[in-house]
Length: 123
Image 1 (cartoon, rainbow, N blue to C red):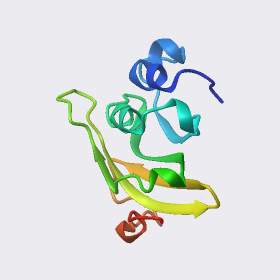
Image 2: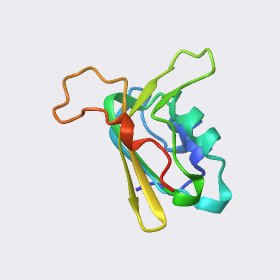
Image 3: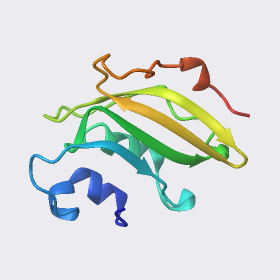
């Protein structure tokens, strides 16, 4: 568990998280304070984060008032660590929604079928 500024940790994980240069994570959960972040910045930072392994699962918690996160996330920056995140699940639990993404899917992870129909308006 790491408690830190999410943008700093995603953009410069080697210094902020104090991990080795070749470290890769297979599961990441993000539960930001709803009122204090810009979700567009979060998604862009995820799409260029160098510590996310191919086929990593990323879970993002967000408020239902946001309506819905996109099904596909791709960096709009021309960077070396550019990644594609494909939405697998997007489920509402009361006021909270949890979106699950797979990073650079290779097709080797069982049960990782995308359900784009879940990434539509939740209202």
